[in-house]
Image (tube, rainbow, N blue to C red; front, side):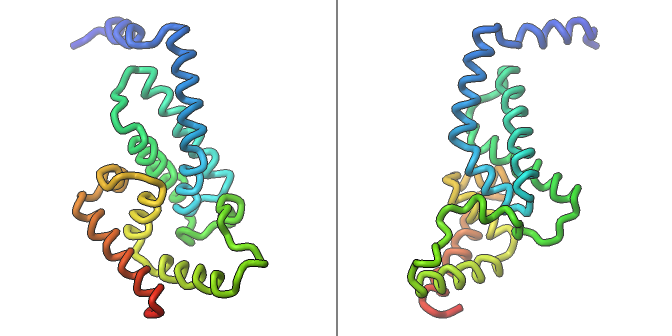
Length: 187
């Protein structure tokens, strides 16, 4: 049995010095700039309001700081960040008992590629058709598509969602096939 003082000193030895902390903070700011909007879109797609999604992202980056500060593994940090975001967003969603999964008043503030009123009618129709198909997909298929659209690899998606690599491939294949069929007019 280890003494508490030995545990404390072992933990303190792993903590970075002042210069290392500054470097860590700079690295964290770089990650924040790179991932903030992607994580925000993903959190909102999980059913959070904009403010809740922002709170989750701040919690995720605080957790990332502690993770790195303690010298824990740095491999696949993108997957780690999305996995932690996924779990924190779901916990927050459950806490607020949101029933309208994937629907949030925050979409307008995040999506910058929403067609403007001046754009062609056919483009708008296409967007609506794809959205209906996307909304009709099973939850796991929607999540796989969203994470893939955010640039995660199949392995990272599998880790975030806790499913097999084959499950990710099958889910994406089914989803993309449904979207392709809707493009051909078969909805």
